[in-house]
Each structure stands twice: as structure tokens, then as C-alpha cells.
Length: 256
Image (cartoon, rainbow, N blue to C red; front, top):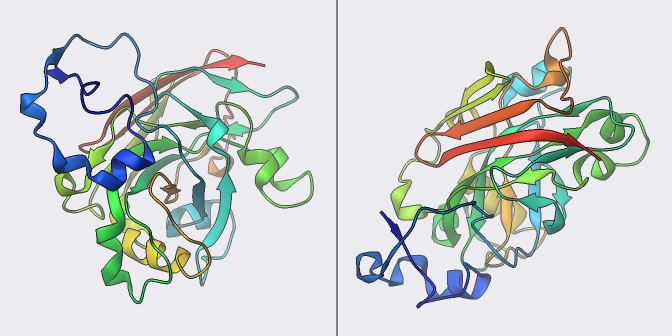
């Protein structure tokens, strides 16, 4: 049964995360009808911090050396769309790619944490992220990765924000992705090079993580760039994604 949160908050915002997602008894909230559309499960995102090459098998399939420290880049909050909204292939794109990722939503400020053991208290919850990427823009057009990561609609998020207490083992989640019904990715968050706690601690040494920030923690093997036939996304393709306990996404690709 769906519950209506509007008597408590108009949206899931950083301020609401700070107050505590679990501070309200959801069973006392009125019932709601089935949603016509899932929007992103978080409003007012401050920043999206992404971690590249965080799975050994993904690093190998791209021909890269496994990193000695986390590779960090940013996506703008404007890339975020609902989990079932259309992904738009950019103009001139021939190498738009998919990436199923575990997204971590920050619920408490993380600043110069002393150790990874402090990280768990900073997590509000988890969600599915599709870190859509244009590989030519990212790797062949000069500069850093930003051009291939920040095209419109390049971060479907959701469908739900699952509170941290409901995900006791974030390093043991199966992650799967299909394109046009063919499975392309089948991994597990246990295979991260740098786990969630380490990433939060590490990032807090370089930036302040605040409530409403999102961390995309990397993708397992099976991206188009790493496959022999390089089956990059085209208009009309359908992407389906799921992570254990976090729901499912479905996007149809359109054309800018």
C-alpha cells in the first residue's frame, strides 16, 4: 500500500533528511492511490559525486588499471530524472552507454571523518542510479569526463529511496541491467574496490558531504564500451535495471 507523505512534508528534501526519514510512523499516514509516474525520490539534490572504475571487472573491460584511490567526478543535479522517464540520446552521439549503480543518499554532514566506521551514520538511504554516459564525449573530446556525463536526462534515479535501516548489507546487493530484453550487466555490490563506508570517509577528506548529496558508487562489468560488438544505445532502445531490495527502473531512449 502506498502512503501519502504530504501531511508531513511536500517533498523529500535535504531538510527532511536532516530531521530523519524514520522519525514518522508511516502506518499512521493516509493511504494513497497507485502513482501515475515515479519522479526522482529526492528533491533539492546538492551535488552528485560519482566514482569511476570502482569494480575490478569493469576496469578490466575498459582496459584501465584498477585505481589505487577512488576516481571522483561530478554530475549536475539537472541530469536527474525519474526512474521510468525517457533517456535522451544527445545530438551527434554514437556512443551513449548505460551503467547500473548503487546510489547513496547522504542524510548527515560528513566532514573530515576520522575513519570509515563513522560513515554509516551519515547515510539516509539507498537508491538505483543509471549513470548514463556518452563515451566519445567523455574520452575522445578532450578535457575531463564532464562532457560525457552531464547531458540532459543522464541520471535516472529511483524509484524509491530505501532507508539505511532497511538495507543492512549494502555491500551484498545484486545489480542487473537489460537492454531490449537482453541482460548486459549482472554484478554485486560486494565486488566494489572501495566500499560505501570507505567512499564516504574518503570523499569527506576533500569535500563536505551534506544532506541531500548523492554518491554514485560505480558500475560492474557489462557496459557497451566493454562488449565486443559495442552495442551503444539508440533511439527506441529500452533499458531495464534492478538492484536487490531497491526496486526497478525502465527507460526508453529518445533522440534530442
